[in-house]
Length: 187
Image (cartoon, rainbow, N blue to C red; front, side, top):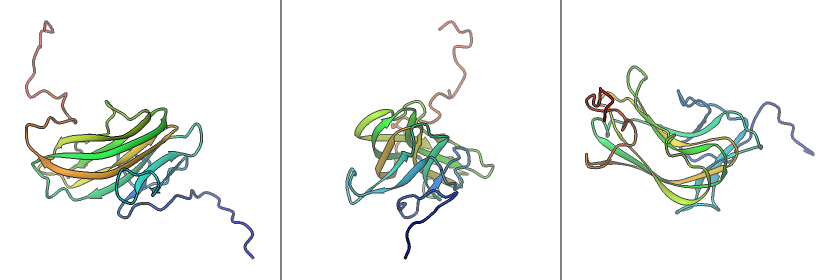
């Protein structure tokens, strides 16, 4: 008879969506096991279809961050402007949460938007979130996903990447001016 199971040093997670993995590192997005968070799929709380993905804190003061990540080739998007959309729902997010898109080139540097300037906080019903970036011609990897830092729970559903026109404003790098201006600080 199996009476009980003792699990030391491992965190059990619900089934992850196919093609997605966990990470704890916002710089490299390398696979990792976030000890203070649960990640998985939820068939009960979804925007559409059969399931959504979620990240939730396991205690009232979780350490670090948790990411649910998918990595792909950006070959179809090189030199183009793209928009990532996802529908997000949140419950009691005390610090930060959101969706993200990160691009890497040959030198491991690139463009990223983790929505730090427009995070998901508190309790939010399903809402469409968008990220728009210009994909460098030398981009080699694209990472998309969702993240949570601190107490709470976030769900995401219906991720979509699409090519958009120049008339759609970028959300990452929008503070970088094409040319210096107001150099006298008088304006």
